[in-house]
Length: 514
Ligand code: GAP
Image (cartoon, rainbow, N blue to C red; front, side, top):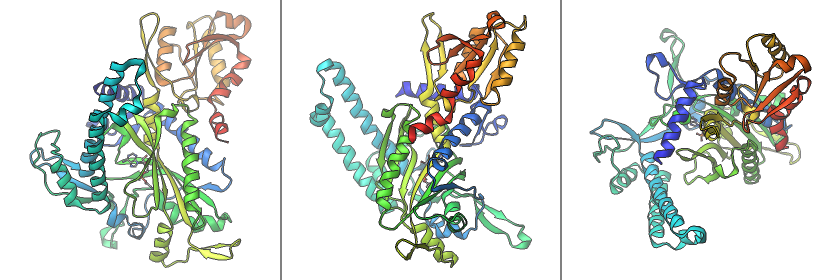
């Protein structure tokens, strides 16, 4: 675990050093859980968004996009349940004066049981070598079985307390498990209280009668309240979907793990409107479609898993997370929820407007059911960054740090480098840049030795480097170096476009989904 923490720290500092992610308001020592994306970060983020947007709106003829405002009528949040129920259970430690999420303290405790089991398994694997039957060991080893039983009992108690909204029981679990504050080391806990996560602000001047509005905690409600507009103006027939990418804001209490849990973040959400009764079938379908989207990036199929929710949100009748193996364990990157007709019915009730859909095939009016896919751009960014970061020992003894980013997501697709800064090589290199730049994010780099320039591009994940040398002037060929293998081949300038395009285009990813 300590080793994983080290890797994660390196990734965070790499992200800053190479212009991916900076703490917000850095020269003022930052603002907790708020981050800025730098020159490379914004490109990587835009590519992730493009991949998602195109997968939704180009590959599904019944999905269209919108871009709704962040400020919305405050009654929307009353109708959706966020004013009353978008809470986290908080607990304070009286000695450290620090505030924690009670559920997170218990989840961390649950994770410790898993860590203990993994340690036992690792020890046994070492002891038994080739003949080790891991599945059998997990089922029969008395120590492992005992730990697993304790974990399951705690899990059951925790899930029930969360489902019942039983704050006293959550506190009692913390006491019974002897969970200590990581800072003070004491068990001097307050009661557990609910804390609403929405940011509030005022719209209009006080003299006019200012109105309290909220920064949206999810983009989904902007889709729900536009459902009728889109359905009517787009003549959409059920089933159909509406996709949106945009900022969301939550006053997270436990903000940690870099961009994993932020107070201002970005979501890519799609609400898919279906006939009542067909929602669980669509839920299953969207679970598969979304996992395929993730896996097409080639970050490693074993890094993903589904996690079905124990505690369903107030609006859902089924929910699962797609989790990704981060350096700090498997964590939620995307949620897929069967939201029933809760939101639309609530908006119908609170707005007084009829938002029923007339189904011409059934000859019936109904409020559609909704399957939602909701993915955090920043978490997706983090999963791509973490799985791409590598420190490689080279044959010459040097270490190279490389980001093996999926080429279509890389911020820079190719870097063009004159071997020396004379003899007409820079001019020839610029000629190539001026041709490629219309299709690919292309860098020109002439500073430092060629080795150092390669390393710089490796560190930001550039899939191709093109080196112009004296031979280029004679025969119009260049050296094409590939990031992952470091293999160098001599190719004709006229072939560059095709060679690069086939690997870096988002279409290459999209075709895997078709
Ligand atoms: N509309 C449903 C919804 O918002 P959610 O599970 O609360 O569901 C969806 O959030 C996704 O948004 C999560 O899977 C995660 O990727 C991202 N997300 C949620 N809170 C976040 C935070 N504080 N920082 C970064 N990403 C967050």
